[in-house]
Image 1 (tube, rainbow, N blue to C red):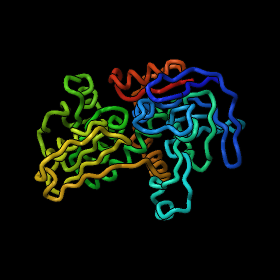
Image 2: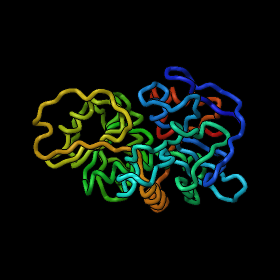
Image 3: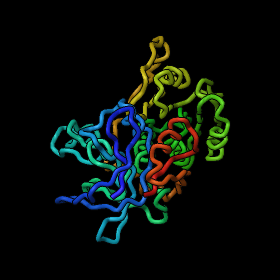
Image 4: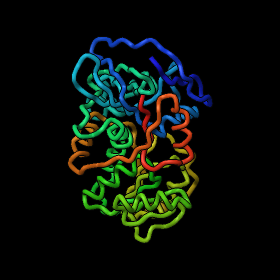
Length: 318
């Protein structure tokens, strides 16, 4: 099978021919139809998040057909948990210390075939084409978990308007919230995109919003946005850091945190998050904006993501 393989940090993915994997007990052999490209893939590529036992096939937003069966499933970032630790036993499997992650500890979807634990696969909602479904499996699921950590916040800011924020804006607006979108300075196209999805306001991340926010989610991996978001939320407000990696958070004065403001992070997802979000998406309905790339152009997709050259999400279609 064709695959794009990670060999070491700082190197581009390498196109290779591999043997088709075999499914073990409790696993599914999958014919990959689409795989979303995530900022986490950049963190893996750059060595900011370690990859287990390279060479490794990246990609953790997989839409695939089960080989030998008439069904289509989605494979998310969370690929396996122990089921025995205090986190797994208390509904917090996302914090399992022995968890294994797709496209990091387990070969992922930048290939023609993949293998996944059936317990961690989700049915794909009918009506979603493969490429449009793929971003729901990480941008959607971890974004959904981030949104739920904001409680009933009525006015919410999204810092970094990429794959996750363009999905979450649709969810938040459907729930009757006001969305304030923050993009890179000068990204007028991205700001117009956000307004077109229902954002009440869109501007640069170095701007103050016209109204104080009840909560903010930071999707961009930029630590300097933490004090900026704290300054934008009301007393009692929450700032959620929604990424797996972030640059160093600069020192800030205590008055930004005072007033019972909260900073918290989101780590991974649970299967319950997946079930809830994938049931909700077609009800809204969430429509994903995607730019597709052939498998051999995975490096181009990653660099386009890094440079912000597309709106919405990038998807590899083998």
